[in-house]
Image (cartoon, rainbow, N blue to C red):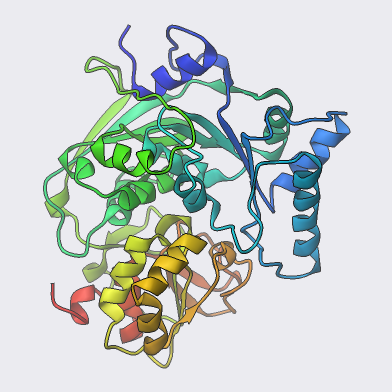
Length: 422
């Protein structure tokens, strides 16, 4: 029976020849992930069950990234619960402050998530790893606890929706714009519990960072996962990092999809998602004059080196508007060091930006950029719900790094061409 890439991965991990959408399976997990918000709950459940050892100390990954470096006493206690557990269990892949990064940028960088894997994480943006051709999805902390004990997860096999992008990209358009455009077309529940499979000449021409951005925001369309079939671009990235063997899966030509959408990239301009939902996406030229108080460039969506390079290209030789705070957060220590070597940090600091050590911080309204009542932010993050980055009476707009950098200079949401030529 023909199967999609998602169905093939799930079948392989369930020890089955085939699976079909809608059926429940128990599947072996390659990597399980927890952070300083979600892992402490899982650890308490793990211990309350009487479990003594995790299923595999090499396959559980723990990353303190949401409120770390510790924001306050409560966050310090959360991080300590995870740190102490990692020491007791001799967890190989516990990343302390100084080595850690934003989890969904860190794990691919470290070669921990690979094509053909089944990955679960107690964080909704675990779907990011689908960019490498893996099935990866977010789960609750109690599900994580069960996986920590058994190494297995039960899942309902999702239907697949195929989204095809063809044609060349317009100037200043990247993966972030493609996924914002998609969500704008299908809404935030348009792919509810589906596997979003991305394909087409545009997708195959994207660098790996843009692919991560696309799969990262599959959850913002309600999807169970996002996935892109591995190709030479994927393999070039993975071969340099892989710590173990991996398998390549692709969809059969006759595979069944519940829906297929076809978009033309040349029709897509840089996008901005207006509050309070990512589905409120429209071309930056069509949103009018919207002044801003803060810009954040970073997160698991757009804190990678190509994102920082794009921001630096815009910011070089310019100054941040005096009415705007610009916060730039490299997603990992490695990305931070690379930005430093390339002189990007000098460009940011000369422009008047604040540069932070890796953290999720402002994305979830945690710290390092919380908004007050009446303030408005433009961010390269993934969510703009009411109160997402602070006060309930603040507003968050979403964009790619080029739009964010240009807007930091002009003081209002702006197309990059207002600052530099195409």
